[in-house]
Amino acid sequence: RRHRQPHARHECHCRHRHCQRRRCPFGPQRSHRPGQLRSRHRVFPLCRQRCFQHEDRNFYPDANSTMRLSFGTVCGYSPFDGATFSYYTTVKGIFEKVKEHAGDIDFAVQPDLLALLSSGDFGRYADEKGDMNVCFISNNDITGGNSGSAMFNAKGELLGLAFDGNWEAMSSDIVFEPDLQRCIGVDVRYMLFIMEKYGKAANLIEELKLTR
Figure 1 (cartoon, helix red, strand yellow):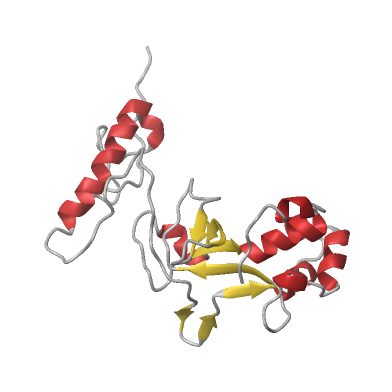
Figure 2 (cartoon, helix red, strand yellow):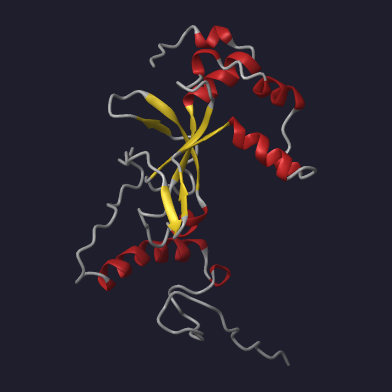
C-alpha cells in the first residue's frame, strides 16, 4: 500500500513564512502546471497594487506584446556611505580586471585585443581626455529580455545598448529603487571602435551617420 508523502515546507510570497497550503497561489513553480503558473504571475502584480493602494505609488502599466520605451538619466550612484561610483567606465577597468583575476576564464581577454587597447590609439572614438569609454549606467529599469535594447539621448541619437544591471538591480523585479539600481549599457563609441579597429569592418562604419 502506497503512502502519500507529506507536503514539504517551502518559502512563498504569501503572508505565512512557512506556508503548508497545498493550493498556495505563490507556491513553488514545480507544483503547478505552466498554465496555472502564468495565470498566477498575472495575479501577483495586482496583489502588490492592493497592498500599496493607500500609498502614493506609481506602477508599471500592462504593456505586454507592445513596443515600450522608458525614460531615465545617465548618472552614477552611492550604494553606501563613503562609496561613490561614476556613471562610466574606461578601458583602464578592463586591464585592472584582467590583472586582478588572472587565470580566471570569465575575465580572460584575447591578447590581440589587449594589445589594441594598450596602444591608446582610439582615434575619433576617444573622449576629450584621450580615453576610451566602455560602459555607462543610467537609472532606467532593466530585466530579463531587455538585453540588446537601444539607448538613445533626447535627440534620438544612439548612446549604446543595454545589456545588464548592477548588483543592486537584482531585486528590481520585485521593487525598483531608483537611487541604487542601475541599467548598464555598452558605449556606442566602444562598439564602433571594436567594429572598425578590431573587426576590420570599416565599410560598415562608412554607412553610418556619426555625430560627436
